[in-house]
Length: 481
Image (spheres, rainbow, N blue to C red):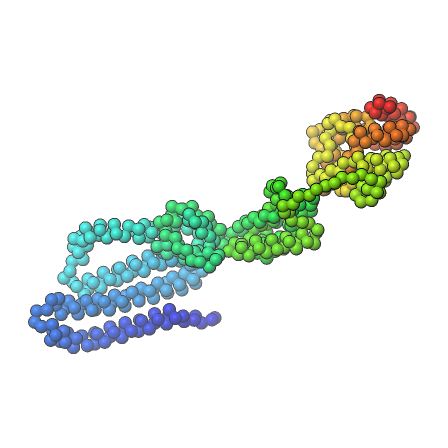
């Protein structure tokens, strides 16, 4: 068990106590000599009398000694007894104990030393003086009783972070005295707020034993994927020091700004007093995570796009990737490279978030979709609830009946993850048929076989023939061929 260290304050207290005890011992030991000296110096009828002066000196010595005794009792009772029970008494309670104990000690000592003085009459005759004193100490008494109210309610404790006052000072509570609340701001400044003022002002409290949330803002370019951004930032923040592992950080889109997508990341701090350093560390982690993931911060820019279509653009770059994707679709197998390139140039790219609906059953449509990246689910209504009947991956297509015949959508298609689809519209397909009308028959046969595989009818051959004839007629009628 470690021994308590004696601080300079303790050393001064011990030295003062020793000096007072020595002075009291010497005075009581040489009281007759002191009395004789005063009588010789002051004459026969001194005013005040020698006895009064002797009693006054005794009262002063006993008062100082009593004050030191009360301080010692305060230390042993609160600092030792309460700490053994792991309970820290508020400063205001300790101050009240000191005042009451010293007042009782002073009254008892005064009564013993001056038995002829009626203490009750003294306080009764000084009522007017008390009123004047009370008015003079109005602010002090207001702070005192407001401090008692704060200690009774205990809205915050020493060590909590609070924001208070008209200037919205934020800092750590260091002391709650009978007069004021002392906080140390994060710029290492000390702010004293009077108890009476604090009782009237709104105070925001961040308890030290509580998980307090913080929000940090950042942004990205519009070309950066939200799903990827949210995942990257969440993983970067959850491993940051002082971020609680009990609650997963929340990353969400805050606004669609002028220059990019505005985000906010909400985390829960283990020690709120370190939130400035933690916020800075999170911003640093986001920067490095963006660097690794190829994400970009948004800043004011102006971009000029010049769109040019050429054969080279079709073969290379993004259009080349679209050509490869469409060429791999079974439905477009009869198309030549040039015809596939025509569809690629007219194809529109769409990106859907996880859980977002691509098409809805019953909606009109005149286009089809090819899954370029990601996955989608085909869902039908089953007694009022969606039931998944198929999952389509990259290279799969859906909605072709709306493109070729104009039929309404027959099912819901929902993105499973962030998904990019290529939409091929009626005008693009009509341009291909205008150059090669014979494609109608080939495509209608492929579509009939696909429908046969989906419906699983009993007579595949007959069904395919009937479907082919019906589809061919519907396609020609829809495209005006």
